[in-house]
Length: 228
Image 1 (cartoon, rainbow, N blue to C red):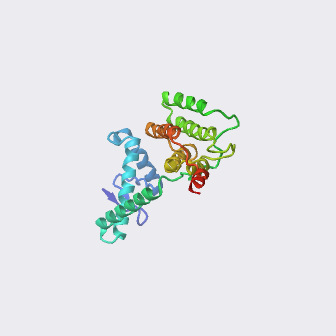
Image 2 (cartoon, rainbow, N blue to C red):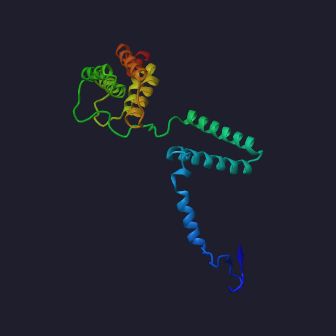
Image 3 (cartoon, one colour):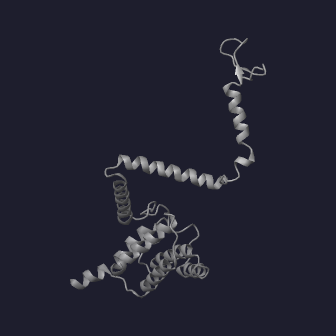
């Protein structure tokens, strides 16, 4: 029981005459915080990883909720928009190819220590036997170009790139021109574009190398002389 007699107006006095303790807001909040930090209140709380996952999905839910209210047709409209965007990205990827692919090599095909086509082929086989397909593709392309130079189908030019070699070699071997250009692109993708070659890519270049050795060049001057 509380009484007000003998006390100032507005002050509560307990029946035993003691004035109750008046706790301000900040200390009361701090006392409640300390009370809630006791382990007994957190026995069923999720661990930090679970809490982070829960917070992430809450954020995703809020994000999609806000987007669905702005998209025509609500949630269904948002799903349609996402599918259309994915389809457009897929179409561009299919049309333009993997990003970062450099269409033309910017560096010479060979280094400062020239080797024969036989030496390049030996290095190729060693890389292939070890499963290093990217290195095998690079060496096979060098073997192809060196072989064309040794057959005098290409002039000896140290600064030549793979694309230049393929374009020039295709003039003497027109039936394999497209294959040479494809091999040069494969070399560029591995060497400059950051792609990783596989066994199939290596075998395509190996087959082309063997086919080039069996193919006779197209001699333009001889054709003109026969026509006259």
